[in-house]
Length: 182
Image (cartoon, rainbow, N blue to C red; front, side, top):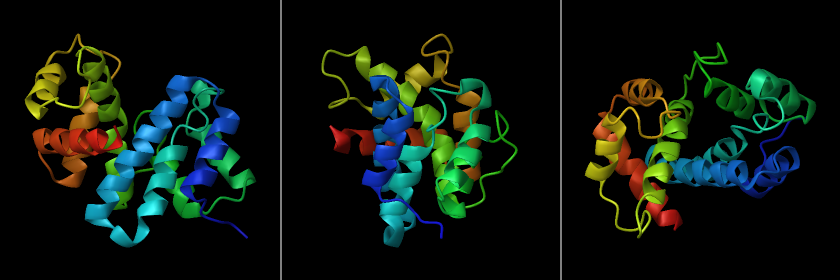
């Protein structure tokens, strides 16, 4: 019988397949941000959103060339619920997966995965980190294609479009969610 893992179970699974601190911290950050967005969009299922956020890159460290494809198989072998698997796999839509984000949770994950990386990189450049960072600072970094070049602005834009929100609003909400984590 398949199951939806708790956030703690999701983190335990993620840590089983990921050893690098960067990947574990990214999983925690995305999980946290997903939880904050869930409070707005789906308050009855906050832990579900957090768990999917934590699990989203479960396969990336060990199998980067098979990202999302390997996660699909791995999560099925672990008897994880289909709703979690779809959420995890759909975050790679158009990049390494053909599974389209359909649920609002999946669209948020698609949008914030890259954006948390951009915000995290911007915070590293500041002596005070993220605590007093303003959305306009992130927007400026977003427009600078050379800054955190590995963070796809197109994916962030596409995610905002899927959600029907402006990029600047998505940036502001994601930044606030990350500040709560501090």
